[in-house]
Image (cartoon, rainbow over all chains, first blue to last red; front, side, top):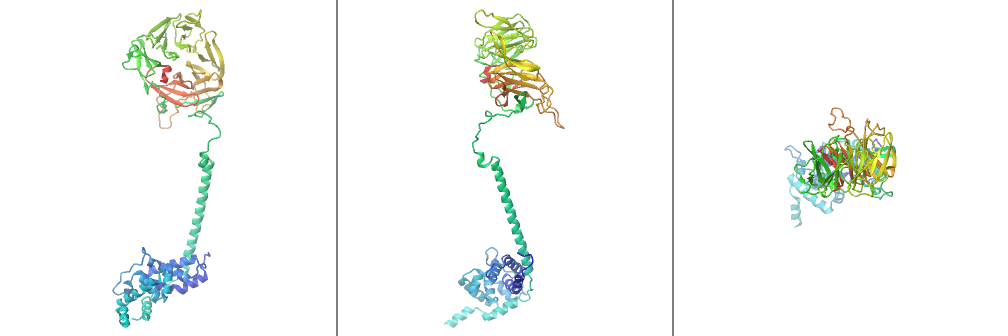
Length: 154
Length: 415
């Protein structure tokens, strides 16, 4: 392993670090922790640089692993009154819901891709995604869409 | 709210997040981790090599399976063998523990007990008969001596005999007890007193010389050699061979403790002779060894084919510490120097800085051979103690602490 940073690795990190830091910030609700977790994920990637089949999945698995762990889940941060309403709405979700919700709607991954990244079943991802969306809507005063759909189906 | 509206809301909430620069930091951290891992691997390898080398060393030095491999050569000595300190004139010698350390030696079990002292109120020999004598001491009653006998079963008895002092004081000789342990003889001025523990009877046999100092029994339990500085006699107790007189003069040597039977060790100036006594021929030399004897102390006492006597030597260069007049117990075998052994009674080591010299020491003349526990164990009186010395093993043990001025031992000491 060379002492100076590999140019290809530097290009890869530069292209993704901003996007993934914002996603991690929404999941962990703590910018320092999000940055630390992202740096840790890139460090692990650097150790295996050139040997990993899908670097994106590799990094994102490490990035969101604490959110899924029973013992080190990302705790909801205390919400200030002047906090952004979206962050207030996200704080009402569980860590797993937040991770699924952010990956689905900010990263625009499919449910199958989210299931692959988070090592969850597709059914679980679908359930978390649906419940998270409804809680998010409710928190922002937009109502529960499931009730509307049920009415439409009748 | 539609699904398509969520993404702009999330992007808006994450706006203002600073742009990080993580490539360099992540790569540097990865390099550090890689170096740390390599260092750990090297340390682990070195540790495994060191442990392996140590295990190989232990195995090579006798540990592991090698330790339980039975030896191919027989042991060089009997059980408990102590390696000799060296050789003096071709004879193996050991050095006894220093004076003052006797209390801490391993004990030898005898009827003498932990401490040998005068009994408070012993019964008479008629009331408490003794089978075999283990020890004889003398009680002093206004100038007269009373024999006090310790039996092989550990009980004391007093003899109804009064003994007179001889020219050297108490009339007790190391060779006083007969080989059977049933008779004991005391030198008296112009006589010898013989006491039987079987009959509780004493018999006094008059001799032509007044100054008599030591007695020594022949193996037949029927004759005694009584000697003084000027004369020595062989005394017959019961019936002897045809024509043998009751008292027969034998050749004196000038040392009243030298005339002993069945063997005597004598000689000085380098040549020591082991002579055996026979009724027909007197003392005839069996073997001779070279020893730096300056003077002898006490009598010669024999066990099996070995005779033991203590001598004071000139300075011995073979000793690790300088001692001007070391005392040496010589156990000389009939088979010559190869089977003979020596025990050097070392004096106390000099005090270290800040300490005082021990109160007890072993001045020349303090010590003497008292007898044999068995054919291979000599009993030696040292300053205030009786110790034993195994001539085959070299082991020195404590027998008893002495609170009497003198003692003669008999075969009952084996119990």
